[in-house]
Length: 100
Image (cartoon, rainbow, N blue to C red; front, side, top):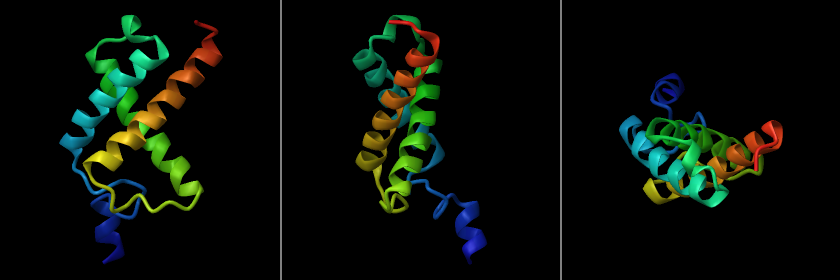
């Protein structure tokens, strides 16, 4: 049973939304994070989606480290996790590359 849940992404640090939802939510979160961090002119739609999805993974991992159960999160929870992680990701990219 546990292997089936892990194969479905449940229990592996992902919320309960599907792959298409991650793409949609990731795109919105990546776009809003790029507006917030001032990198929107440098990114296109694809990069916004990538930043949002990677941000969701980063945000989920950070929340799991602090003991937050992210497995049962829905659309809004996933969006805020993705936004949080995308802002952190863009901040780290700016820190490493030295861009302002």
